[in-house]
Length: 357
Image (tube, rainbow, N blue to C red; front, top):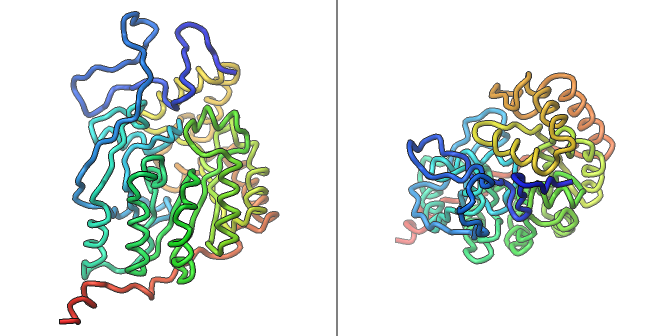
């Protein structure tokens, strides 16, 4: 039940309900408590796109517990608006807020394809899987127009470099033709993020994403096309969606998922205040319980920066989640095979072009 009382207005079209201060900016105007500002214009925020000519597109991932070596993000910020998203903090480096700005001011890296070609042509590159959406969703709405992710996939296929994808958007089906060719060479894995099967919860927690039914359909269609697929049941939020784990993993397995992963929500940086504000507005009847259970998974805090602990938490409740996840994976035959991709097909095209002369 959403609290609709004065001072607790809730915008169902957005995840974050306000813009907190950017920690890197000394002075700025922010809209934190709209109920106390009578003359502040209360118009719906429309999405703005900022076109950026970046210097790099592939990032080396140094965190040992993330499960990827390299990532590429054609967009910064994400219109999906997932309230818990860990990528919100990175938007502050661009001079924006981690709140509403994150989901309404999207940075578009329009030269990403040229940068990826240059990266692959570098003689020092040793072929390895590159994960798309390591930070924000590569299939968010603007991709339908820009087609940057599709261009990046075409380049991965051309160079025969393996790629991993994680998304909440059915737009990934548009690129089925490329994904099939990558799959034939064992060069791709696609993970679909499914946090629950409760549509009412999704509309509050992930307001601009594809429905859960649609995501399961995507899993099924990709699997039937011979594209290896998995599911991320993440993040698990105690008291909101952790009790849905069984049904999610069962449905994903039936749809063709071969692998599954999970994380326990961690609210680092500005995300803590953004999430808490959302939680007490969206679920005032259980907000205290949910908040305390999150703290119980991180040693009394809502965030834990220790490697190995920060993603799965610790304590009794976190262990219960871990045990249940292992049980359900065994029951539904998930994670029975390794997710190894083939790097032996890689070819550096600049060498082939030079050989013609």
